[in-house]
Length: 47
Image (cartoon, rainbow, N blue to C red; front, side):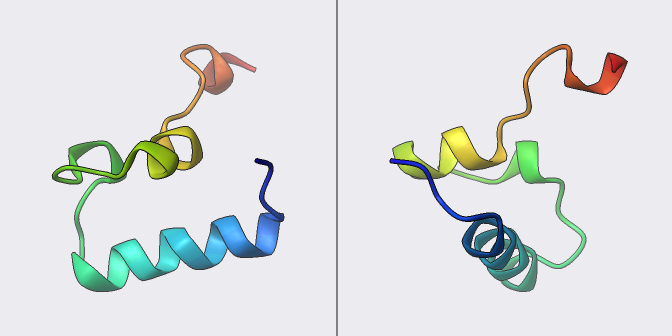
């Protein structure tokens, strides 16, 4: 299921509020639906 950019941003902001300063990829036990939101494509940073 695709999420709107606003919903994704809200989820990321919520995650950062729960763990201030934590890196998203070190988030403990992300839910299976969260993984597709917070896991960047391996080559995205190269573009």
